[in-house]
Image 1 (spheres, rainbow, N blue to C red):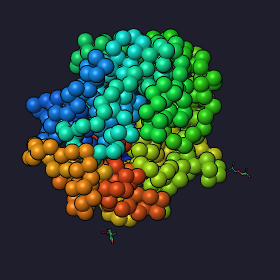
Image 2: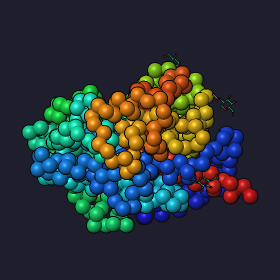
Image 3: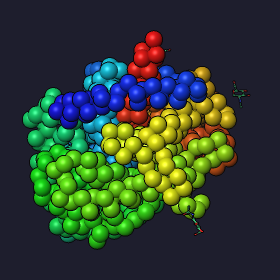
Image 4: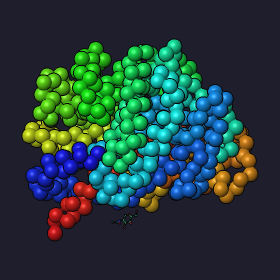
Length: 513
Ligand SMILES: *[C@@H]1O[C@H](CO)[C@@H](O)[C@H](O)[C@H]1NC(C)=O
Ligand SMILES: *[C@@H]1O[C@H](CO)[C@@H](O)[C@H](O)[C@H]1NC(C)=O
Ligand SMILES: *[C@@H]1O[C@H](CO)[C@@H](O)[C@H](O)[C@H]1NC(C)=O
């Protein structure tokens, strides 16, 4: 992390004054929010989602230990990790994507997270995930990819501390492969190894060993994990298949190792795996092509990668299709991302905010990349786009999330004066276990808490809920899970974005005096 950031810092100095000045109007013409407060809260959310034995420094104190026998039936220790959303299943694929995006946030914007005093919390959020992945990867070709299942879990409405539902664990192995979940876990561990390289080199090395083995497993034994772990269907089916995860893992491994073998993989399989074929307008836990294309574009700016210029440029042109689509600058409506009347990225009604945070992250990273390049402008079909415009777009999305929207509602829970109070979240909606240890049974939660019109007794700070519909409307009801449920991968990209905006705003305020 250190080395990479130093380089970035010196690179940006030459344009520092002018770029900041050009941003002045972006930060003064529209309402800004307290991004450092948002950053602190976003990291609290990961503590609320913790499964396992909670540490003494746990700050979200309405939670307690849970899932302490996870894996026991299968003879493996799977205690720890994250609950995915408002339920208590530990889904490996989205958990790994969450950790990859948290790591990317630090790799890209770690100096700003540190500047806001939150680096330690951000690193802890990653480590809570990677400690679990280490446990779950019990031998080179075995990865435990899910604990619990959506069907039995959703039948109950309970606090995690009271859980009575099945905690059966499910794995992928040579005979039942899952290249998508193994690939994403490899990506997460490789990206995290970059984060830990300076501060905890032994841990970083350990993560890298696991990442390399997992990638080997994913690549050698090809298969879609949902064909082998049937219970994940209807929850986290890998619709895009595993080709994107293989490219994504190889790119992160290349970043982590500098080993040319991984870059070759990304170049040689670019076409066959759809890396340079798919023009796509979403980036998510399932579909990673846009993220791959942005990472590959970053490589293009380095001299040593010029031998692969032609393939990398094809990745870049697809990255730019995605970025242009966010800005509505591709030719034709269906080539552009939809927006609500209030200007929010709109892809689909169920948990739309995940696409807002992932899209804002990529446009911000691309803004920085473009600013550092000597092109300075992105050529879209319908006109040029400047780095400032990309940043402005990203900031607009984030400001919408934080309350600059038709309902004046912050969709980041616990932020600002008005936010969702009936988040679809079992733990948050029931009295805290620390306050009332009396057992609350499977359906008792539905009877006494789920249907209540009262606000949740616990505020799940930093959760980004599914958000408004295509008309900017939002109904704050626990049963409205498409809008009021939050997921870990919604918040993960925001960690980097909040830090970047906090830094820029301060830099501009100081530059203007
Ligand atoms: C932003 O929020 C933090 C609390 O997280 C507070 O300490 C700080 O004063 C706030 N900044 C501004 C400018 O209001
Ligand atoms: C956009 O697409 C339409 C229909 O294919 C075409 O006629 C038009 O020239 C295109 N515009 C640009 C700027 O490429
Ligand atoms: C949102 O805030 C604006 C400006 O303060 C106000 O004019 C508008 O009526 C508010 N809208 C709602 C739905 O509260």
